[in-house]
Image 1 (cartoon, protein in one colour):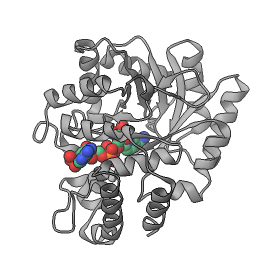
Image 2 (spheres, rainbow, N blue to C red; image 1 turned 90 degrees about the horizontal axis):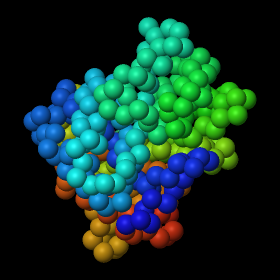
Image 3 (cartoon, protein in one colour; image 1 turned 90 degrees about the vertical axis):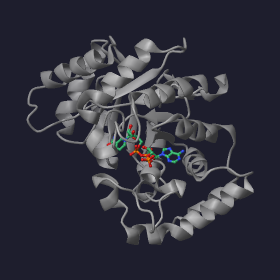
Length: 311
Ligand SMILES: NC(=O)c1ccc[n+]([C@@H]2O[C@H](COP(=O)([O-])OP(=O)(O)OC[C@H]3O[C@@H](n4cnc5c(N)ncnc54)[C@H](OP(=O)(O)O)[C@@H]3O)[C@@H](O)[C@H]2O)c1
């Protein structure tokens, strides 16, 4: 299992698994149906199974479940039956009412309290708002040793370069940019972000890598996802347009020995040099997702998926 911990996060010395586990849905009742479809016991099993199978990187945020996600993750860490240490990433949200640079230090203190940790390995700025101010503020807490590495999220090429340069002037590396990327969201290939991240040695963390469950093939025009978030984003017409891609994904998955579509979607991201951060609500989903690390798509299959996803 050791071989799965083989990527360095960007140009830092922080070793993480090639796939990360996203905790947006952890404790989020309104957006994700926490408490109905899945419970804390399911999430504990996701946490334990991840570590057991070689996946040690967990991504949360202060706003997920209004703090519940960090609290649940904190309990998982404290009560874990494994002796494997996780790598924890969380995020600061630059709300417009947060003024002074000290607001970031206070937000970090809140996250650390909920997580029950003295330090997080990766602290990220969730959105590119007031880039100069918040990048300098996060550099302050880095210099104080409160975080192991600095990341940003949803930064476009210009914002990424700016953050990279601000930190560079203070002798600090920008470790990562977390951004939406999947077979149905490939904008960052054409806008140059993926390339820029490679050039600057900034890890590209791909969020919503299975398009919030849609790329598993389980949601169809006849069976669309429920809930306020996904029912709007993945309407019947959108799902209809995706069916040719789902068909090719199904063929590729079958030709690779009966893999699942989730694994094919995650493998495609790995083939682009990105690190997928994928959500899971139960042990079945995490086992499925983690198994994407056990095999690799051929260049030919990647090409087929590239073509089918140009829609
Ligand atoms: N930085 C940001 O702005 C930002 C934004 C979004 C996400 N993120 C991060 O990225 C992570 C992942 O993104 P995401 O949660 O939006 O989407 P995702 O990982 O593409 O999809 C996760 C959802 O897909 C379903 N699923 C997962 N594995 C499955 C499997 N093997 N088979 C069938 N269904 C499966 C589950 O929902 P159902 O069972 O309900 O279908 C699960 O909640 C988040 O948790 C968060 O950490 C960051």
